[in-house]
Amino acid sequence: MNIVTLLSTVFCLSLSLTASANEAFSSALDEGMQLRYFNQLQHAGLFVTTEQGGVLYQKNHQQAFIPASTTKLITALLALQHWGADYRFKTEFYLTEAGQYSPMLLVKGYGDPFLVSEELAFVAKQLAQRLQQQGISRLAGIQLDTGYYKGGIKFSGASQTDNPYDAVSSALAANFNTLYVQKTAEGFISGELQTPITPTATFLAGKIQAFTQTKSGLKKRINLGQNEVLAQRYFAELLAAFLRQEGVNVDQGVERASVPENAVLLYEHRNRQVLSEVIRPMMKYSTNFIANQLALNLSREITGVPASAETVASVYQQQLTEQFGWQDFTVKEGAGLSRENRLSPEQLIDVLHAFEPWRDLLPEIESNVYAKSGTLLGVSTLAGYLYREESNQKKWYPFAVMINQKVPFRYRNKLAQELSERLK
Image 1 (tube, helix red, strand yellow):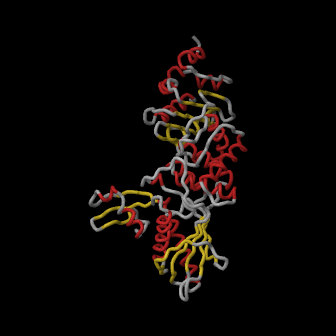
Image 2 (spheres, helix red, strand yellow):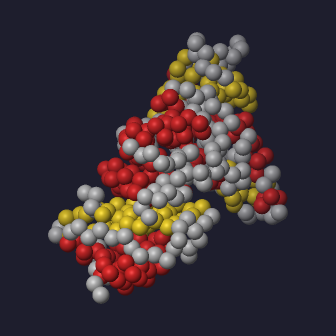
């Protein structure tokens, strides 16, 4: 019995053997434990191609599945195509009049997804220098303009837990809209040296059950909840704390406002992390907050209206249809949390071929396997590149595994590793 007959009768594979390399790849499929298990799955698809698009292996490659966090490949691709790898997100800082003696600092947010404590400390230093040049040592308070996004954003699939991966999006957000807090015998302190504790952080930590049930010692990262006012207040408090460290007194007032016509631009900050440096950790740690911020910013620039879940879904539909000619697909948000999302392995391969200039942004999850994983209850996906060196040449093979049923933990990684080993 030849190999094609064996695969057809034992594994029910759809196999294309168009070149000698393809034959070498498939010559020992009957020995593959992981692939043998895969072909017994009822709700699974797999597609592997060469860099040039030649088919090495396919099963249910045009069937739609829930992609989970492999959706982030689409978000990264659209962002990199739109802005370029060296793009830096901005935040603007204005001075506005507020009484006889002290001006207000007004911050206009543009959805920068990477305003972490280290970045805000740098911002505070720049602001302090400019304020001191103008003889200003005191601010009456901080105003926030968050109109770049529509208020009350809620994406399909989002939950309302205190876990960091459920952090909500905001045009102004510190530390991915999360807190890292430690409980001590005296109360709450920051769980990280670079971040001062603030009143809002203490207030929110005191409402978390895990903290109320322990005396001291617990460290926990939580999100800022669904209350946008609290999230924005925390941003203002943290910025004020860093300004005080630079010798600028800041009163406690926090207000929401729009930039008035007479406002004076004090400082335009461009994040020190370029877009590629934002996407790399998003891929490695599957950060939903970053993905959704990128999706919202993209939709804001393309539509010209305040970003929302609706503008994201509309822009993704338009962009993917125009670029790939897809007809049957659904992408509701940019992180992959929604169970309404539907993509096929073939469509993910289209994305991977377009993503090739930036494939180094993907983590190496197994030896010679660079990929983005996706996980939801009953959903396990993996898409990326199998790598090998052949005749002193580097070769990359795009692949997409989509499983919409329960499988063993890390099975997708083992399958990808087995596929990679067949290329040797």
